[in-house]
Structure formats: C-alpha cells, structure tokens
Image 1 (cartoon, rainbow, N blue to C red):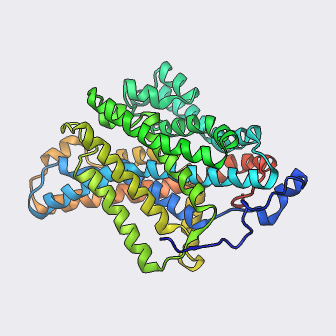
Image 2: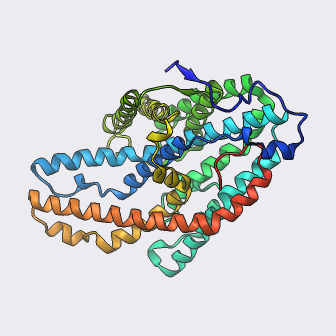
Image 3: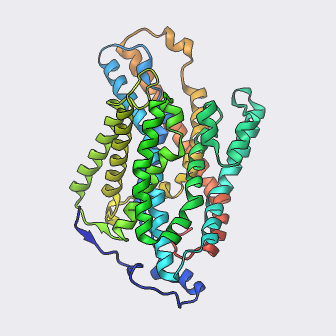
Length: 415
C-alpha cells in the first residue's frame, strides 16, 4: 500500500502558476484531473444503494430449509447496501478536495464563488427538477403526497433533518436527503481548504472523525433511532467526508501500484467490513437495541470498508476499467435520483401483493418463485433507471455542465 506511483501529469502541489492568466489555466490540458476508475467505483456505490432499496428482504416472508438460509443472507446484503451512500460521500470529498488543492497550487488561491457556482450548476438543476416532479406526483397519487413542511425542508437543502424528525415519505424524492447532507458540508468546505491550508485542513479532518463518533455515542446513549435519527444526522455522516478529504491530502495525486489480485483481496476485505457492520451489529434492525459502543464500532467498520473499496479501485489500469461502467458512473447522479421512482413502478407491476404472498405455502419452490420475481423487479427497474438517467444527463444536466466549465480552474472529466 505504500508503493505509490506519481501521476502522468505534473504535480499540482509543487508548481505555482499564479502568474499565468486564469483563462489559460482553465484551458490547459496539463491541469486536468480525472480518474475513470473512480467513476466505476461511483457506479458500485449506486448499485449498493439500489440493492438496499430494491431487494425485498425475503427473510420477512415464510420460508424453510435452504431458502430460509439464503433469505437471511439476502437480508444482510440488502442492509449493507445502504453504506453506498457513505462511499459516495467519501468519493465526493476526495475528488473535490483534490481539485481545490490543485486550483490553489495553479492559481495561488481558491475561488470560493466559482466553487459555489460549479456546485449549483452540477447539483441543483436535476435536484430541483426531480423535487418538483415529486410534488406533482404527490398531487396526482395520494400515496405519494408530500406535506408542505417536507417540501420546504428539501427546498432549503435540509431534508435530512426533517426526515430524521418526522420520518421517511413513500414519495420517490426520499433519497434526496443525502444531497442535503452533501450540500451542507460543501457550504463550508472551500473556506476550510482556502483559509486553513494543508496542515489545518488535515487537523480539521482529524477533529471531525472523533467528533462524529462522539455524536454517534451521545445520540445512541440518548436512545435515538439508529436507522433514522442517527443515520440521517449530518455530523454523523461528516466522518466520511473527512476521510475522503484526508485521502486526497495524504495521497497528493498519487495512486497505489497494485496488481489485480491484490485489488481483489482488498475489495473482498471491504465487502467483509460492510457485512460485519450489518450482520454483526444489526445496523438496520429497529427491533435490536445496540449499545453506544457497538454503534460506534459499526460505523468504524463501514468507514474502513469504504477506504478499502477506494484503494481497490484507485489506480486501476485502463484495460481493467470497462467503458460501459465508466459511463454508468458518469451518470450515477441521475441513477441515484431516479432509482426509487423506477423501483416503485416495477414493484407495483411485478411483485406479489401481501395476500398473494401469504397464500403461498412454505416450500422451497415457492421461495424460488419469489426470488425470481425479485430478480425481475430489479432488472426492469435498473433498465428504467439507466434510461431515465441517460435522458436526464443528455437533455437536462449536460447544458448546465457546459456552463459549469466557465467557472472551472482544473478540468475533470469531459462533459
């Protein structure tokens, strides 16, 4: 893990080009920072969340024999899928911190106004368009109705706090709570990097990690619900942003030179950490009360798993990075936004009703039938999600991403 290779482009941390006019900096090819393998990791993070929301949790149905055992494992895998959100946070912080450090090295400062403009043009068009669509859907279908205070909270990018207090809605806008957490963090982060420099930014990250654990401990000790109040707390989730930023500050643009076999082992270790967090500490079980220490330990396993996934992908050779998966990572924001809507439609079309499931006898064959139905739901909803995200990227997000280039000092991926 200590064997690090210098990136092909020049190091942005050793050359100060503040005398170069800003437009030239923006257009210089040498200032590009893009790692396509991390787009694949983005898609893996989305896929984890997709399975969390899409798998039926067969352990709650009537099974026997080997199907009952398989259903138990399926429930653990389903529960661990929620940690894809944490991986999203880590990746986002790594990439944005890296870009901010390169911007300061190349231009002599960090342009906070331009940073906010880039965030607005990248996140807000799809976010608010889908929020508006969710409101219209609630007006048309009673089951998806959204109360005014929930709409207000999401409009103010504080949806996670509202959901933590009131509860989740059946409306497909539910996953947008994580966008609120992300935007809250990035409201302050460019100022931290600009004013703090490398040393103080590292110190702040190192403070955030135990601070998040302290919030975890105190919230759980006070009896807060782990699957809602604790999980949705911004200060609890900030630990993953801090970890991603520390990775950017520590690596300084370098990547690990690891063989494919080593990466597979690291990836499996990351999976094991997530499964331990869910299967041992019962991360998502409201019927099992965990001690504050167990809650802190479970999040530690999640964080270690996220870091292991990151290192298993960072520096992958181009021949190991499938281009279709790079594209899916490129549109992962749209995949994340649309997946609950598409899952909802698929469940209504293909899943059995409660009465139909209750009428099934406890046999291995009926368990297989339910499993096949679940696979059908996942496949159809994934296809719908990819189609919606592709159209969104092409016709909604892409025009704003082109505008975003006007506020960019270090280029990343092509629009």
